[in-house]
Amino acid sequence: MGSETVHRLPVIEFTDKNTNPETESWSETCKKVVDALEQYGCFVAVYDKLTQEIHTQLLESLQTLFSLPTETKIQNKSSKALHGYEGQKPYFPLSESMSIADAHTVQGVRDFSNVMWPNGNPTFCENLFAYTKLAAELERIVVRMVFESYGVGKHHESYVGSANYLCRVMRYREPEIGEKKMAFMPHTDKSFMSTIHQNNVAGLEVKAKDGEWFGLPGLTFSSVVVMAGDAIMAWTNDRIISPIHRVTMEGSEARYTLAQFSVMEKDMVKAPDEFVDEDHPLRYKPFDHLKFLDFFSQEENRMLESPIHTYCGV
Ligand SMILES: O=C(O)CCC(=O)C(=O)O
Ligand SMILES: [Fe+2]
Image 1: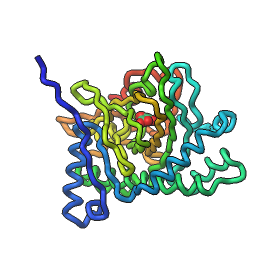
Image 2: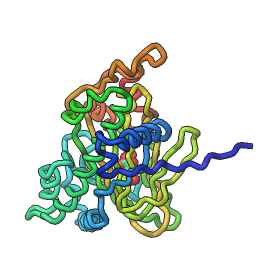
Image 3: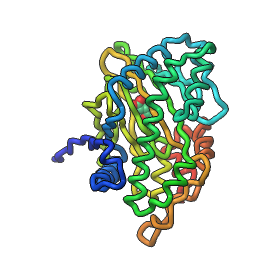
Image 4: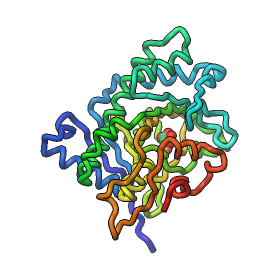
């Protein structure tokens, strides 16, 4: 007989007050963030700057984007690993997605938009950028909290200088009768960190350390799921583990999400000395994050059980 734990992701508020390092509530929030990341590898941030208006306009713009003809959407192409249009996949017929490179910059959003709407679409750009810049801001706050809590805050500035953001916008249609509901297979993110925002349709599920899958009910217009990727797992030498997650579609409404991934583009991903000692021997060789993404994007490596361990595990 086992008593099953009922898992629920911690919900942490991000306000002007507790995101100011001068305050006491900053240190309290740091603790909640690190505890959540160490336990689940993710948590729900409620970010007060993400207003109902930003959310509604963002979702309207995503609907407009996905209603473009497929011939237009497939123009979202790139030579960079893990970028570009994905969809019409026989194994995962429910999902369709596109990627916005340099998503935290006006130029990145505009370059993407100009491919979809060659005559320009300023409303789309404004609506998207209003969100992507907040997502990047939130990610940097969380990373700073993590670094400071572990006593390695001196690395934050170089992290900010090195990090770039890729935003993947996704639409999952509702499954038809008899169709399988798994819309995104179980995986860990290859990012440093990910921030995930959705419309009102649930579907994201996380695997807890005890092997139980659990959903994330109750997300609102200002909720962002902040999730550790493989790169922060390696950087913290396994203090934080990137969680396995998947998307399962129920019901009769389409699900829209934005998953924004941070990538350490300039510096090597290398665990600071503070994380390595006799009890915690180095678990990952220092690696180039972009090269890891290239490795993972190769067909033969997509199905590996743990690409990060195969790539640079010690
Ligand atoms: O759509 C979601 O909620 C999650 C998507 C995801 O896990 C990913 O893009 O890596
Ligand atoms: Fe993911």
